[in-house]
Image (tube, rainbow, N blue to C red):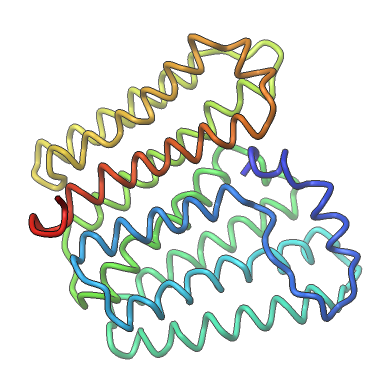
Length: 274
């Protein structure tokens, strides 16, 4: 997540050298937003919140936290760090324990777990070969985090529907758009072609999902938040490249919660969405 890395690279380095018993938390602040927004859209689609929903949220959070120490250990390569192993194990055991409990009640969750494991493997290999900032790896990571939407849906309702696949794609396409806008801050002479091409393709996919009845019209309209953000970036490129990182983070966070508002209101039952 390039935006979060810009904010926290130095603080992460300091934390990694701390005493082994001090808790480790992922410095990828942007991913916290992706995780919670995606999860809440899944819960909204389920139109309920149960004790299993709460467990699923804890599981998703611990699973996300587990990745950080293990990836840090991969970066260390031959040098074993006790702190990474201790906190990686704690988060992994917590996530796996809850995942097994939920999986026994909802076997469909095994597909979600498989997807998360594959994504973690891809991320670890990318880190090993120093390709963690590649577009492919970042899109893979976003798609894995956005699995929290179907995770919340299945854990809450115990069912599966094609619409939840559409919701996962909507979340993935929306949040992955950040990869292409943040590139404007990383290059002195960025081309607008990749960003425009991505947003056109993403929009066409969402239109297709709406056309075939996978997404409701208002839910599909949430992708326009990404298009609006791109318009701001293209119109104010100089500002975007030179603005303080806190301003960019505020833009991204505000966009994410506006996306959540539109999506959740379109999915909640009428008596709750007003």
